[in-house]
Amino acid sequence: MPTPDLPVERFADVSTAHLSPRDRALLERYIETGGADGLSCLVGPYGWLIYASSELQAAEHASPGLAAILDAARAQDCAYVLFDRDGLQIDGIQTYDVQRK
Image (cartoon, rainbow, N blue to C red; front, side, top):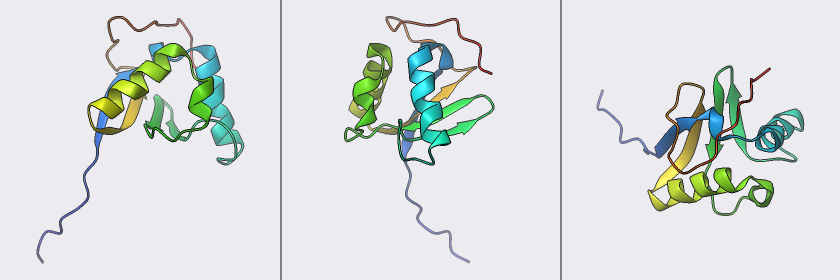
């Protein structure tokens, strides 16, 4: 069977330490409301995968750091940002000492 050509997307991989408590609440609200409110994402035990679309309405409520990371991801042709507890911290972007529940 021939190997199909699959669509491929890039993603950035950064630390969850860059997510403020308000950012985390925005992400959790998306999950809790079944996508009706909050910031479009997938959640797992170690972080979130966020769609980096410039059309995100909820992004206006994001912290400056989250907004900067999403902007940088788009500028580098990334469709998504993986916020991973083991991801690297980015110089110049605020971090928070928040333990995930």
